[in-house]
Image (tube, rainbow, N blue to C red; front, side):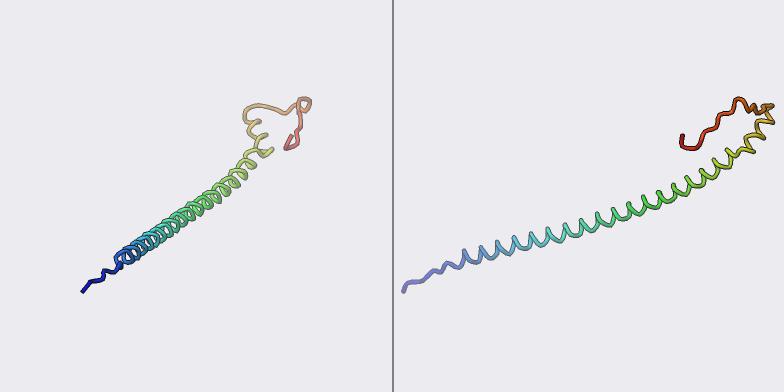
Length: 100
């Protein structure tokens, strides 16, 4: 009696190789999706922090602008000039509009 040898080994090896490649691709996909979500969340937090600091700086700028307007008030400047012994000479006054 002759024994037949079937060639099922190659088929099993190819199936195992295909399953291994599939698992590697699946693991790579899962890893990259988790990594990308993590990066996205961290960038969103950074963006929110930048927006908050920008809002704070805008509020500080508005407060400083109001303070500058109060300090450059004409009456205040004239009071300080009188305390220093200075007087206004209308012949030497040059007026500028803001923005010039």
